[in-house]
Image 1 (spheres, helix red, strand yellow):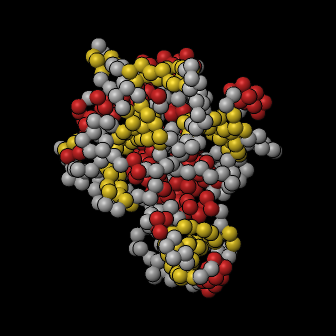
Image 2 (spheres, rainbow, N blue to C red):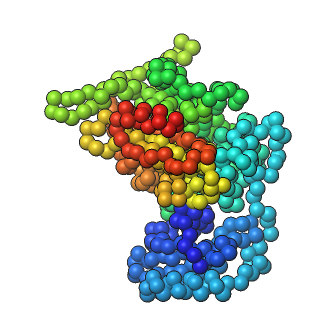
Image 3 (cartoon, one colour):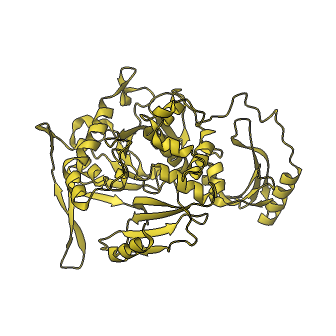
Length: 472
């Protein structure tokens, strides 16, 4: 028996454990068998403070499941000894572990090469940068239920890869937040619950405007400011409005029996161009609440406030476009969820920190995070090599924008690791976890003998110097 990387254990067991286990128990230690086939977990009961030893093995569909356990042990030393004995004496019973159904394989080719998305081709390239991401997605696939029967084909294709990747990311996030899933219905994309509270989620994305063959270019600051005021809000608005009008079996989503009387979330991602998620998010506040946030203002008392322009109305084809939450048609939508992290780079980082991948390429993450220092103007900018000591989670960067006029309000306590944004009639007030990600980029580095330096700072001058030195 040997110690197992915590990040890897959490990935492998993400969809194995009942989410309720964390409300009653604290996970303390993770182990693997000497042949790496089984996983051991030691828990502490939060009520009576006893210890439990659990042993997991893969079934015929490659899902980990509990095969042996012992509970109510008095010390952690006793739990370790029991777990080691169970691992050493364990004999696999294939009959019990047989589910009479093959394991999912997202990478069994169903799409012709000319129809495959370039990022999918990168995933299956054994010498590419995304070997860790591929291993993560493979592990997740063993637990995935393809309710509409076309997930794998779309995941591989030019037209479906990004939307399906976004759904995979959301699926992991909701599980990390402790939700169970109802897979009985084909729509909406997710029906999740914690105890008696249920939430419906429909995934939305801004479709790609940039050609897949076009070289990645990052817009200038002037171009970004122009797009944020004139183009990006309407992109978000168009995708959300189209989803509002969409029907399933001739019913709007909120009219479906499985959704009726439940909060409904639209979870949106921006894939209109490469790296667009890193800068387009202010457009969400603009189109949802009709607010454009301007420059910070230094008040005489030493405090700082953000200058807002509210009451914004957008125009498209000479038609006035209301802010969506101020439009009565959106009263059926409880909130809009967004994350800048639902990308292939996220899966790659989660894999590398779990010890997956080829072990030779380096990933260097630079992220902007909310600065919780009172009266701070600039975000924290943090740069670090991604490794097994990293502690990134699926919830990093999740923002939920609550609809003040929704008929059914969303309980923010259901999503404790997300940032929550509320409109009070004039301002958007936000409750943001410490160090919550605003945007992030990942640099793939080959053949670097030493690691680039880690840093955390407020000053862009220092960042510019490091960027030039290391040519990031």
